[in-house]
Length: 290
Image (cartoon, rainbow, N blue to C red):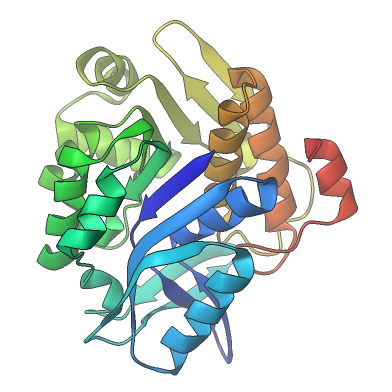
């Protein structure tokens, strides 16, 4: 599979420690670890964090052809954990608010068909990146469009959500974001999922409930997998690993149920390790048959 993702690259900062993150990059990092190909569209600063980000992205095997240098500094998110649950404080503006592409970039991107195009809400908070994403949504060729609802602070609005839904075939959100989505779009909470499946191109909707498991809905079926029982050390990136595994195993011809189970297995592994893209040990590789 060939995955293409648009959006934020940033450093998650915990006290005096930092790890590379950003939802689109996290998803791609796990797709690479699982065995897929991955390309990122983003920007970093002309600074030490940007240099380190480029080195880390290269080490993950993610193609950086569409990773450009911004006038702004490389993004940071100061992370505070409360019983393992993260809250974020973002630099504003950051390099990932300044994502733009050349005519040559667009020509290369549009010359092929991607397995999946991955995007979200956070990278739409300022106009430059928002305009670039919207142009891509209008023109890019992909088998699937994966829309990650990532409501952080007030960096989202109805217009960006509705634009994201125009081409999305797979939507992912957590239980809190589901409530926010229903209110934003004018649905009752129980009406949201059937209405979205009926009124948009969506074919699958994933809703995560943390320790209470995850659901995937289609027009005809509902699938559920329980969360793992391992002790959570760090939940940063858990949802991104779930997204990656679900996308990857679907692309390998696995059914909905198997893909969701494998996604939950990987997310459970990630929350038991520090960092959003930890190395995989032999046990998780065996469980996922990779």
